[in-house]
Image 1 (cartoon, rainbow, N blue to C red):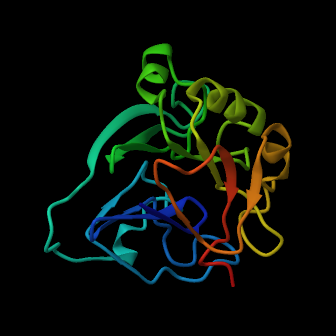
Image 2: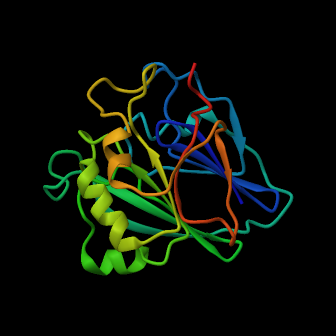
Length: 207
């Protein structure tokens, strides 16, 4: 399975000739990121904010193959006040190639115990690492420790040339992590043999 980091919180998952884009950003909504130019068979979004809900920027096309993914959703909060400040957030769980891939969206607090039970046993988790609009890096790390995925991919953080100024870089989050691997590509090929790691991917959209 291919996991391509397009930028901010947007990923493209590809398996068996089928592709899904998760949390596309609206064009012009993220400082320093170029407009999306992506085609997929399906697009899903975690919530309605423009930096996660640019579905009109994704060209969707009918697939010639059956969707190999089974998708579950877990409803959560975008803040630590029951959604009163930033509203709801949907965590997406993708099952494919006998693996379990989780996109946390803009998770704002630790999920409830029953929700955590649904997340455990993941092969890979895409998790926000920049704080401010989401749970802070230390909280995200504690969530990750409970889920215990083989692979963690940080997202939703500031870089030297992109991202919201109020966000942190991913370095604080990485300071809590082990087996950090910095890739010179935007794509991770994930299979059952992929080792435990925190995978820092390049962002396709970084100018």
